[in-house]
Image 1 (spheres, one colour):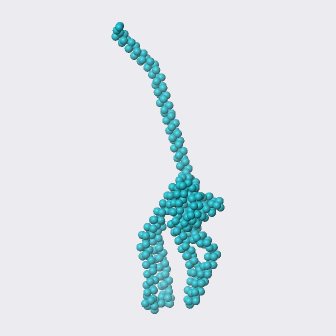
Image 2: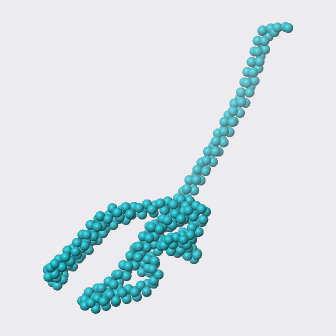
Length: 337
């Protein structure tokens, strides 16, 4: 075996290192250019990704802006309609009052029954020997005041029944929509199997749809027969869902929760104000109770107020002040929720 000369090995090693250095020096610029090209390519791809993300975000913002604008326009239109309806709901005509009370009589029948009641009570008062002024007052009150008061009482009682049942109807609609039924079928379900008076009002909505009205327009007419904020909320939810889309079952579920919370708040306010109402009733009835007791014990002492002109003047002034006091106490103890 022949041994290699160390000098030869060193020379070969130096030649290899020199060749590697020359090769790296010759190819360094090419490697750097490829590396820079890859960096630029990554930056271009990242920029394209960022542009796509910016474009998607911009489209999302524009869509949200258009949807918000649509909702604002819908709310503005509904608000204008509600203002027009509120102007008529404060003093509705007799025909509307009868519809809101759920009565199936016509205004002509109402006037005939009012006149008959007024004449009957007037005849009874005249037969009892009352003065003509008292007979005229009883006839007028029985013919014009009492029937309208009865209609107003029936109307307010029907509204309370509607408020008690309306959240339950909304819950049924929410479950129906979640099970796959469309909104029209959910409304028909309440119109067929709901409780009065919600059943009758939803039947009017179905009849309006059969006449060609859209669902939002038919629901908006609910406020005409039930002029309550709850009916207005329901119409707003349906109108916004029809124009802007969204989860209808969730919106109706939230509306049902809001209506139940409003009812609880009204009950709480009524319970807290019962003491004030009782005090107002006692204060308002106290003068009449004292006058009756004094008349029973000393009729000659009290009869002067009715026979003497000065006593009649005192009674008139006292009645005016009593009316003002009762109205002031009424406004103090009535709270709107």
